[in-house]
Image 1: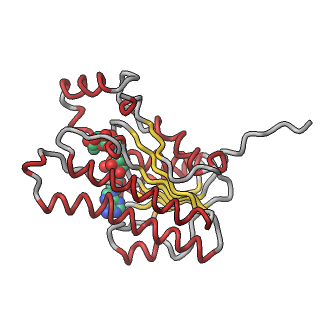
Image 2: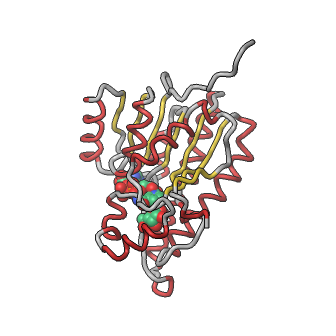
Length: 252
Ligand SMILES: NC(=O)C1=CN([C@@H]2O[C@H](COP(=O)(O)OP(=O)(O)OC[C@H]3O[C@@H](n4cnc5c(N)ncnc54)[C@H](O)[C@@H]3O)[C@@H](O)[C@H]2O)C=CC1
Ligand SMILES: C[C@H](O)[C@@H]1OC(=O)[C@H](O)[C@@H]1O
């Protein structure tokens, strides 16, 4: 009798690209993929911070390289995807919070430009490169629990993340036949530079922890397992899905 075996979570021999890799969730994703065996191209705008991260990764014995780029720039995207990547994790993101009654159109455009427009064309370029090479691949967008529920002072951010959720589903339908998977990863509040000011307020932090069923905000390590899962053969039949890492926030 031949027993079934768990498909591999390893990524040896795979090429991965991670955006937003100089900080927070993106850096954690890059480390998770590298630790699982992938050769990781780390993308962010700040060359200095990115180089520091890549040097620290290499010191661990992992394979990583720095590729400074602005993902809102289509020329930068064309250069990044001159060759195909087996795994793409898009963790670059921006937040501008405040009451919807006061939203400045420039803030609206800035958030949509990174969180939605760049996510859209990055997916398109990643998929085109895979199709041209006749290869399959996995694209993962770091969306948010705010792609599924509303959040106080977060109308623009929520709009951008809800749009990403719709985009992922629609692209999954088109690209399944090409063997290209695309999924979203939806964390709750995670300690990173993006949430520093929110967490600095003890009342806000206590309110958040009461909303998260597991009773605590997240650390970047909390999303690393999900990144490896969605990148690897362990999720070979998973596409168009939203993978919640939200401590139960959206459960009710
Ligand atoms: N921190 C949190 O609580 C949560 C964050 N997220 C999402 O996770 C993603 C990462 O967020 P964090 O790690 O918290 O933030 P972060 O501020 O630590 O990292 C954001 C990264 O994106 C990069 N970036 C921004 N615009 C870029 C551009 N145009 N081109 C290239 N790189 C660019 C920054 O340089 C930085 O490396 C974002 O999409 C965010 O919306 C989702 C749920 C919770
Ligand atoms: C940056 C936001 O405040 C943070 O990011 C998320 O996606 C969380 O749900 C928070 O809204």
